[in-house]
Each structure stands twice: as C-alpha cells, then as structure tokens.
Length: 246
Image 1 (cartoon, helix red, strand yellow):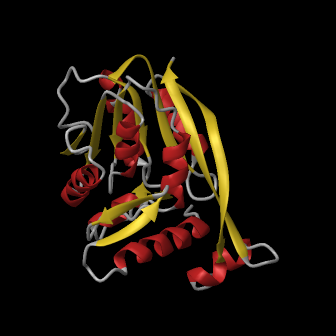
Image 2: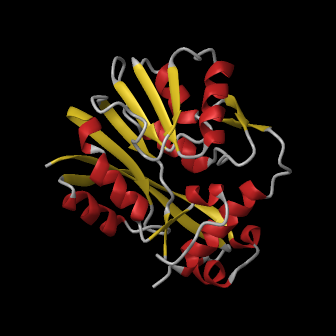
C-alpha cells in the first residue's frame, strides 16, 4: 500500500526543484556556496545532515552513489579523503559536482562519473566508505518517472535500493562501511535492512534526526494535514544506517 504522507512530501520536494526557472542558481549550505544546475537535486537540510554525519577519515577512499550537486564529495575531499569519487546517473549532476569541486579549489581531488550505480567503476576499484543519499520514498512498483529529477525522490518497489546492495560488494574494501540515508516517515527502513541482509550485509541505525515542515507550506494536502501536530507541523525523520559485511 502506498504511503500517502510520503507521496505528498515527495511531490512537494519535487516541486521545489522542478519549479525553478531552468537557469543555474546558487545556494548556501554548511557555510559554503554551491552552484545548482537545472535538473539537479538542490542541496537541502537532508543533504546537510547526511554529509555532517559521515565519519570522514583522513586518508580513506570515498565513494558516493548519487552525488547530485556534489556537496558531500567536496566536503569529503576537504576532510582529507585521499580518493573521492561521485557517481550519478544524471549527466547534469556529475557536471554539477565537477563545477562545485572547482568552485572550492578541489578540481583535481574529486572525480565525477555519469554511471548507472557502479557500472562505470573499474572492476577492482575499492573504497573504505561507500555512501548514498538515495530516493527516500518507496513508491509503488507501477510508478514511472516522468522526469530525471524524480529519480532523486521516488524509488518504485525499492528496485534501486535492491540493486545497490546486489552490486556494491566488489567495491567495498575489507573492513569498509556503507552509510545510507532512509526515513521511517518516507521510506521503509525494515525493508531496507531485509534487502541488505539478503545481499550479505548487516545494518544498524547510525544517526537519526527529525525536521519540521509546516503542512501549509506544502499546500495542506490531506495526509500531511492529518499527520501534523497542534502547530500544524509535519515531522519527518532522516535516519542513517551503517552496513557492513556479515
């Protein structure tokens, strides 16, 4: 059964990106300015939480699947990761990541590849930390993406999540960890852990925090209105899982 609240929040998030005028824009996050190209997911509070929670260790090899505007990759490079690679299926996103790396003086430190998950990596590429801030909304399997940017919000049947765990193993170094964002409100953490376990990974909650969204800001759709507290605020959690091989 479709999560009506998740669908409403997802549609609202999508409208904030698709509602742009098609021109390049800039935004501020984590005390830095970022270019955002048309059709690329705009950095938001979830991006900030995801990036700030990662245990970025100096000297480690870092891979992000779904790099979008490149915020997390740039922060990883600034934190001293020796190799930083960002993958995204949307060409505008990898171009955006390269632009933001250059904006922050890290053009030679961040690699960005247009790739369907891990397809464009060399078979022997290994990383100590693999992370992903994937589409949070588990949509019905029948949903079809009308635009590329919808891939950043909705994952029909959790097919992308399933493929991630089926394909990540060759690229995770011995002792490496996977960090993935999910949400009790918008996604399916229990289903996520099952997919990971089926692929040979165990997971635990690493960090979690909620943010408030006024229902009126979303246009007061029915599920959001019903879920709002006395102040009319809908609370949406962002929960990071840590996974490792069994």
